[in-house]
Image (spheres, helix red, strand yellow):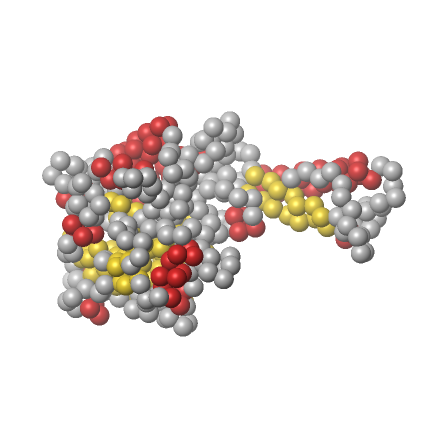
Length: 384
């Protein structure tokens, strides 16, 4: 057998999935400087999917920043999905589960690439996040508009606030089988109580239960923000193989093993900086997830068009030669000192530019200044 034939057989048995979360389309869209950032990076993400000829795109919530995105944001999203996800390239996997259950909320309860009126080359599967969750009497969100347009497949919705049963989308490519579970954003405190009270059930496939690669997409607090304001990993079923965790913006996309539950967790993080916090300084990535039988591999792909963010802390008490509270010009001295630090940060940002013409020229800079002297704190005008 030739190496080419062997490689083709391998590809016919392997799922290739582009994974991303928290794209936040429309964030600061009216800002003169940063208004197009989310759209440019979403374009990059979809082009990566097309160039790598993925089987599908899997999104972990917060595709939109606003629950009711502007017409510009919805229009641009539709334009990009149509540009990159429609075409003649055949979809290589099939769905074995009952799609009326998987997509029961939709007026078109079947996966978009099987719609005879559409020409889909890259199916997009997405749960909703807390920013784009269904609201109102009709329980609709922007993802439902995209679903109605035939451009994505919104899954992971629960019909009940008292009991959740998660029925997987069953995918097969060759002999590889994926049970894709999804749970759109639920208020953390409520979901925490539901887990404690055994009101969350993940249904297993009836046939060949142990042959499925169990992939779960969730959008909740992963880090603890209060007694019940997060979802502990040990709440999740131990038959899961990989969790794609949305909502947390720091990029920790390399799968890490939970030694108690024995599954892996990948936290792709956001593709745009929305809070000037330390976690947002990490380089932004999406992932290429390869799944064959029960084995997986996550390839990290750094995004080239993200506006970089640099953060430094400055404690003036650590510079006693500068920090002289009795100096009548101390405010000016501190301001000049801070501006020097900012200039150094800008120089460093320029040296680290990637050279991609679509990467914004202006970085985000934050200098956190703290004034502390022995047992008392002094406040001066500071600039961030």
